[in-house]
Image (cartoon, rainbow, N blue to C red; front, side):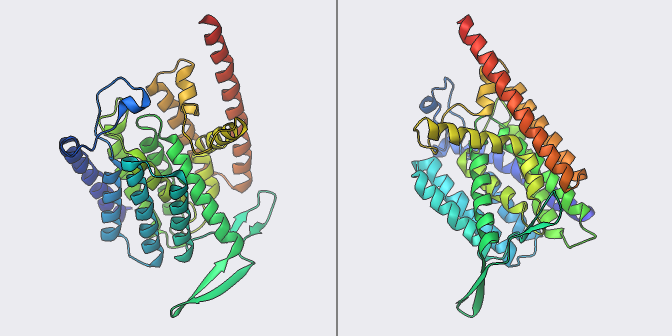
Amino acid sequence: MTEFIIPAIFAFVSTILLVLFALKFFPKFGLMDRPKKYGLKRKPIPYYGGLVIVAVFTLSTIIFVPLDIHVIGLLIGALMMATVSFLDDLLDVSPWIRLLVQFLAALTIVISGIGISSISNPLGGDLILDQINFEFPLGSTMIQITLLADLFTIIWIILIVNTMNFLDGLNGLVSGVAFIASITFFVLSVGEYNLIDQTSMATLAIVLASSALAFWLFDFHPAKILMGDTGSMFIGFLIAVFAIYSGGKVATAFLVLGFPILDAFWVITRRIVQGKSPMKGDLKHLHHRLIEVGLTERKALLLIYGLCAFFGGSAIFLGTTQKLFLMIAMGILMLIMATMIVFYGLKRLKKL
């Protein structure tokens, strides 16, 4: 465990220092948010804080993690995601261009050899994803395409990237959930250390966890700085890749991010049914609904943190079959919460 302390401290302290730098100099460079655009009645605060997390994670990885093809692929894909997200924060890039870059970043992960060849079947056995293979030369290297596994990897990464982006609706929500997810992956990686070499995975996870926690200190409501899409989509990309890096942890990732993922599915379905673009944002996510029915921002944040920590923490100690039952319980709880939100929302409307 001692080998992970220095990367953790480096990431935490570096993030603190860079955020303090951003708080002082971002206003001078005009790197501020636009509260009037979203109908908010407050002064602008520093935006683009995700650049801090991008810089700290990239530098920490170069210093503390051996740069094999997997890690290089991870960095290239993550920096692609950060670049298009920064441009979107700055210039409002087309959703289709963002989706294209997400696909290309996910494809970079596939080409670098990160993926998942099978998924544990809770009813017994495994679902094999690497039975259909193609090979083609790229210079002096043979690139292997594993159809089902690579398709699953790409869809999974795009799903989690956009789930984390949807989650970025309350100050401190993405940074808090990112810490919970990353620390869960770290604990799992350290636990598997004696079975397979998970040093790189554990280091990457503790670096992101430390940076997210440091940023959260400034991001928690009321926020002094915002990460923007630059941070949320960069973090989403990393968490998605962590779940399939050095052994599949997809079920665990799904449990940690279960409520945000289910919320994303619900929001996209609702927008399509209403004839709206699924990529056009609104204020109808779970965290917005919780505030509508009377919770303060802090209480809504703490509730979502608690749910993510409970289900993610439970996943560490459970086998595949137990995780399935936990997912079912999560779905039932989500349905109960949705029913209560609708019920209390109607009661508030009647009082008005």
